[in-house]
Amino acid sequence: MNKSKTKAEKLHLSRVAGLGCIVCKNLGHEDTPAEIHHCSKGTGLSVRADNFHVIPLCHFHHRAGGHGKAVHAGRQTWENNFGTESELLVQVLYELGGEV
Ligand SMILES: [Zn+2]
Ligand SMILES: [Zn+2]
Image 1 (tube, rainbow, N blue to C red):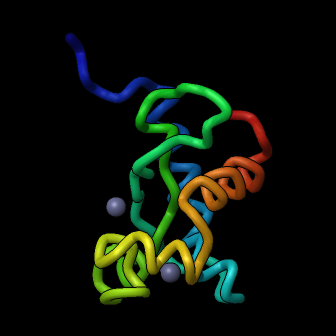
Image 2 (cartoon, rainbow, N blue to C red; image 1 turned 90 degrees about the vertical axis):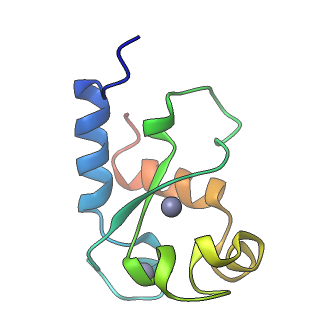
C-alpha cells in the first residue's frame, strides 16, 4: 500500500496551516504560525481520510502550553476551554471556503 499523501491531501494540509492557529484566531490573535493537529475523531458528517481531519494549532496550543492550554496535555480540559475538535474542524473547513 502506498501511504504517502495524495496531492489533494498535501494541498489541504498547506491551506489549513496557512490559516494560522484556530484557537489564537478565536481569541483575537490572527495569523499565529500553526502546526497541523490530527483530530481524534471526525465531524460525524462524513468519513474522510485522516489528513482531512486536521486543525491548525500553534506550538503553544498544540503541545507546549501545558494542561488546559495545549491539546496534547489534556484534550478534555482543552475542549472545555476552546471548543471541541469537531467544532473547530467545522470552523476550519468553513474558513477554507467549505470545499475540501
Ligand atoms: Zn494558538
Ligand atoms: Zn496534535
